[in-house]
Length: 123
Image (cartoon, rainbow, N blue to C red; front, side, top):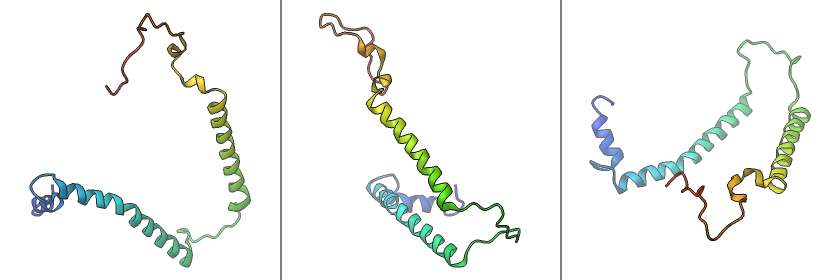
């Protein structure tokens, strides 16, 4: 609720007195354009940060506790990504049946309908 301009703002956003085609097209357009706007703002931020450099609010420049990014963090991230990829591939190719419901391994009998058959949760 915005005083004085709230009703006018709602009518302007909706494009009328109710939600209709103009409302959906405006919000869809905003939904499509917003990531590009945010990406542009992040790029501008990085350019300004690169040009001016970052500052320490304490004004102290201690290089004692700094760790170089290139060999250490990249290696650590690559090892972690490879471990996750190996785990995913092992589950995908070797252990895929652990994700199935156990009742699906009962041998089919065409004369009897199983009692465990239930509709999915969204029905």
